Every structure is written in structure tokens, then in C-alpha cells.
Length: 331
Ligand SMILES: [Zn+2]
Image (cartoon, rainbow, N blue to C red):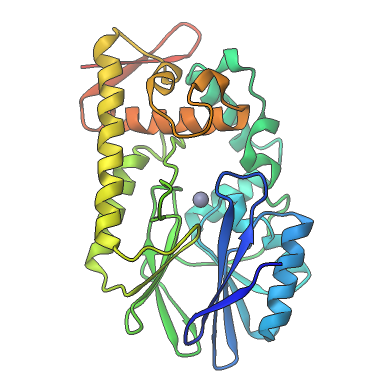
């Protein structure tokens, strides 16, 4: 069982393992003030994590009738137990409207959202990889049922005892990720917006969502304008040098954009898969062709986000070939 750590007055964290996932663990925060409690995110929908959360709740001795659960974004490591929180524990759930709507549509395995995931894989040129929706990590651990919630949109406030949080637009990693900022206490819960050592995954969602990398780069810059002493991110160790980490992440993407541009320069046209194959990856099998199927979804999505960034900047464009596969080229 993992231990609970007190981070500062009223703020606690438990690091819960995510077995078999490259993220390794998730930091689940609780804010406790004047009898009220805020829990931030839930971990995957598994028996082990449910047990960890139950022990956490018992050890913290919280009043569930005065507890709010806030979900930073739709990913299943953050929302997996939401239905359980609602049905079994009766907690009020708060979440950004954009991600909530998208996630609710994903509860049903036959929904248009999952069909879109597969048609995107086809557009990206992944047919030869033989992927199925069951290979998608977000599919396996998703909440299987929708739950009632209270929408929190950017600049809305959320009060827990002495803590007055204001919601921040941290879209990019997902279409509607929300952070919580406490100005007087200089606290920022940032979800997966900024992480130490690991780069938050930026993926292509849909043409409707558009240039998620461009959005992400703008929204990490915004953190610099907040007065933050305690940045609480959802995975790994906490970041001390926030501006330094933002610059590192910007440089990381600048290099990846350059890689994608180089591949386009060397070829008349490229599928998203071609770009992914030519990008450098720091997962154990460096070669895209040898990636586990679940990672292929992620890698292609990331390559695609970098291509859409170039397209939004007017540097690249695509055509659809006779099979509906996207062929990108430099303009
Ligand atoms: Zn995430």
C-alpha cells in the first residue's frame, strides 16, 4: 500500500501505482479544509486502485457528504473510478464540460467516438498494423457508464473550506483539460499539463478539435503568468523550476516539429505512419514497427499532432488518396 504524504497545510498526496503502464503511477491529491474535502482524479478502474482509494479515504477520515471529486481531464487513469465514486460513495463530481462530453460519448463501446478512433487510424495509414479498438488503452480502462456531474469551465471558481480555486484552461493534452489555481496560496493543480521527466502526450483528436499541439504550446506559456509556488502535477516527482520545464517542453516539441518537417522535405508525400516511423522515440523498442499495438495509437497520434501543427502554420497540407489515407506534403 502506498503512503499518504502531507505536502502543505490542507494538501495531501498518495502516489498510486499504475501497473504495466509507462506512466508508472498517479499522484492523487486531496485538499482538506474546514470539514470539506476535494479529491483530484481517481486512477484506473481496477480493483487494486479502488482498494487504494478506499484506504486513502478511510485514512484521511473525510466526510463523504462534504466531498467533491474533481476530474482534471478525460483520460482513464484520471477518471476510471468516477462512476464508483458517484454510485458507491455519493461524491459530487466536477469536471470540464468539453472533456466530460467527449468522455460520456466514449462510455459506450459502439459509440461514434470509438468508430472515429478507428477511422482516424485508417486515415493515418495504420491498417497494416492490424490494430483493433481493444488494443487502445483508453478503451480498456474507461468508465463504462456515464455519471452525473457539475460542469467547471475556465475561470469558474471552486471553493473548498479556505481554498478558493479558479479553473484554468489547460487544453492541449486533451481537448478540455482543466487546472485549478489558488492565487493566495500560490497552488496550481495542473493535471498532465506539465510533468517532470516525461513529456505529456499531445495527440491528434479530430479535425474539429484541430491543432492540439499549437493549443498546448500556448497554454503551457500561460502558466508563467500565474504566481505559483506549489505546482502539483499528476505523475512522477514535482517540478521546482516551472519556467525551466516549460522551456524544455517547448524545445522538445520544436525538435519534433523539425523532425517531421525533415521527413516531409525528404519525401514527396508521407502518411502519418511514415512520419511516426521516422521520429525518434524513447520507449524501449525504438522502432515503430516493433511497438506494442497500444503504443502505435499513441505514436501515430503524436506524429499527427505535429503534422497538423505544420498545417496550421501554413507550412504543410494533405490530400486524401483513393482509400481515404492522408498524404501530407510541404507547401
Ligand atoms: Zn492524461
